[in-house]
Image (cartoon, rainbow, N blue to C red; front, side):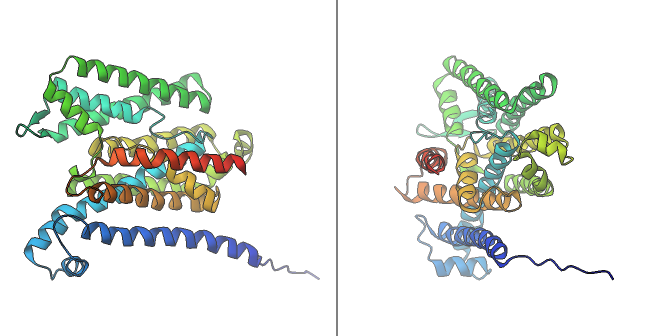
Length: 354
């Protein structure tokens, strides 16, 4: 006589999973609330009621221009860029098994800065609008060269991994060395440039969410969206890698392929975002670490959690930069570095104490 067994999931496990989902939901809700505030905040004097009416298509023409042409692209760009940078950091930390791994420690940002410097200094993409302001008169040329610089650093790291089979730790060190090299060449270019071109390079490296247009936002959204789908499809592979290479191979994971493709996709995200909005640091480090402390290292939940936390952090930083000494707008790259460094050190110290 055959006996049938029915396996039930323990209530404690269900509560554990529901807690993770609740944290992700609350973070996304906080991002939505902050987005409404960010659209409302500023020197234009738009009330929350006017913002809601405008979003529903019933606002005044001047409010419509401010909301849809200025505020909305900026807010959505902050969210999308934060999602991309944070999830890229989450995946690189997993596949390299290094808590300090991120697109920035792999030299991608420095490569982008070098590319932008070449476009501005060599090809004259920067100029002055008047005696007091510096503009990028050919932003797509800067984006193109910044993208080439970003991917150049990525390709070198990938070649080292593929040809010499360097360890994950060595790959991070290679990225740091490349970043130092790109920074040195950028400084040499600035040394021989005139004041206007130097000012243009510095302006680009500050990081500025407000420079992105709807078209730029669309490109970033497509890249980040497709990459998120790819990462979620490989979530079990990343969980296996967290247990070690030998364990992952024993479970049937093609470690080299997963690592190389993961690095390439993560670097592509960071390259595209950095090319459009400039250098924005610490999002790829802080976002994943915060959520890892809150919900653990299961990538089924850590990937979406890191993405929403990155969007929240970058949107909060940009909103703070716009409002703290309004009407002066502080560069978001400086805000994220200022806020990110102590938060990262705090999260890291809490982890070691445990």
